Image (cartoon, one colour):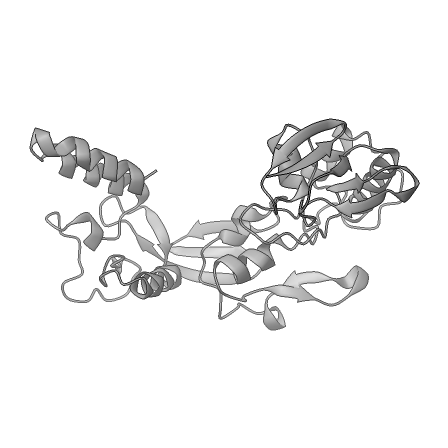
Length: 296
């Protein structure tokens, strides 16, 4: 453990903890847009700025990328230098994407005048170039379906050649981590559409209730990862209810084990509950513990 002082209060945190994590764990509010717990921090939005040391030798840094390595680090989360830089960065983001609600909420919370700078972008533009979607695709999913393109004011996040990316598996992780809702996901007629990547992918359906579960590509990717862990193949068996010919032996069968069917989370939980309820009383308690661990 190492000691850190945040706005005059002393705390102990594990060595290597970032300043942002240390501050949030102890109740200090520091705004972020590009930061996400599941991704490597890059500090690109510049809203999480803090001042180290204070005074004339104070240094303004991004708190999400600065680790606490030794005792005695002094941090100021709302010094004049921090507030000035934070408000300026937020004003620049608002000038580029004036219609984004999360930016408007941050501007209200931090007393930023939304009219301080002339509007440079379209009110319909929602992408703030935080990079979350690009990073989650590469770091968490292991794909590179999208990336940053062009430079300066023309910078965008796009798939290769602005066409439907071959690497996209329709997992919707990009939409999940997007802070502004710029990544839109719709499902119609057995297909999943992800804008603005132009992804158009067929869906698998639940063998029990026929609700959409995931895309064929995502299921195949999960199956590959499962096999890499040494688990038996077929634990993510598809249902082939997408208009394609159903291979022999893969149709819905009420006598199948839950792990042999493509089930939505709700039906899978119900199937597990029914299976445990049929067990002898002395075995149910242990089975419930295992079920809770696997289906939180």
